[in-house]
Length: 88
Image (cartoon, rainbow, N blue to C red; front, side, top):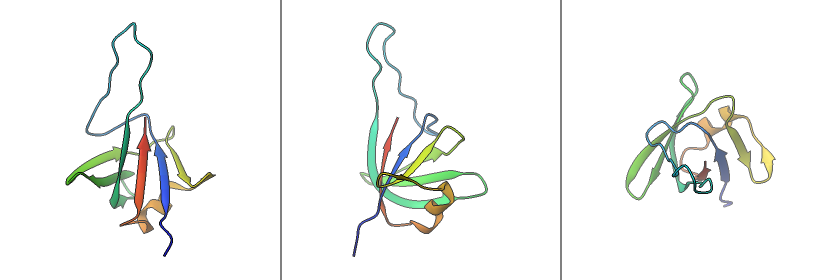
């Protein structure tokens, strides 16, 4: 069985904010986990990692990728249990 890897790049994270000091180079945050659920009505993605759930708000600036191809965010609803990697 193939493992589906969906890359979700999002600028808005529902439960965490990452900030860099004013004079340092911009940093990025990465998270790898398993898709728990995606609510198409609220566009909220829940990912389980390290035994914790993290919620992401998918918006117009978010990019959902299936490998190197762009995917529609609604495809996340059918991806429960699949591996996901998020980058900000």
